[in-house]
Image (tube, rainbow, N blue to C red):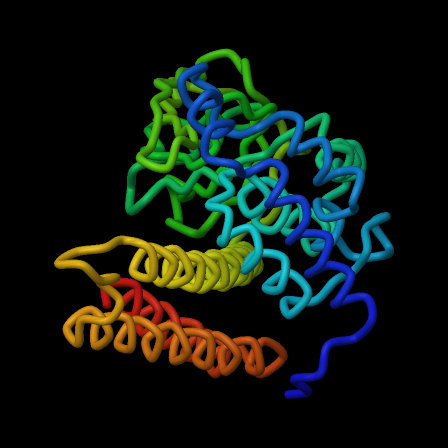
Length: 315
């Protein structure tokens, strides 16, 4: 893996760093959360104007065709600002899945997500939670999808269900407001919004089905691994920002007539945090280096990174 950044990658990192300083200021964030907004609409507009939303979409679909390293650089900086904008759920998980599936109805949805006018959310029916029943002229969905991240206000949902007859994976596109679709929305700890979806006989025609069987499993697996790596990159950025905040505080907060940063116990804590964050970034790089390997090697590296970065975040 080449650790030297290209000119384009430097531009992504630097533009994200500048935007985070402007839009992720704590007071602005608190005001937005108090208004019940899961993300900053003005910042989301910047995502579209800077091309970040299009970064994960293949060039043949009108996107920028960026790789996971490009996306990780962006997510590290967004993690530094604790950004809650829905780029992972709407674009990286859903729009890119539609593009890779070659679904015939993808064009309008992908274009809408890249301009920021439309948002998609991934709805996973865990186990037998969401079942597709085939009926004359199409199919209907019954069941529930709990905690759909960024599901509040999404215009459409990429739904993962199971066929009632053979149990195979079925991926389908369900528009918000479809008859029989109910949702309960709520705020998460980071201020973002989620929704619990309920499907009471939501009708699907054949054109709404994105993929089935092994193809559906592979598409969903690819989307989840990409989303996981993006979230891990954001976690690395958050850890590094936390260290900077703690170091600044330790240098200015005085106790017993001197900055607490001079106390050996505080120095040891900061040193442990620094080592953990460096290890987290290293294991993230390792996982990114396996993105183009076969699925088994890629998935194993992503799982290893998820565990190691999660543990480092507790240091």
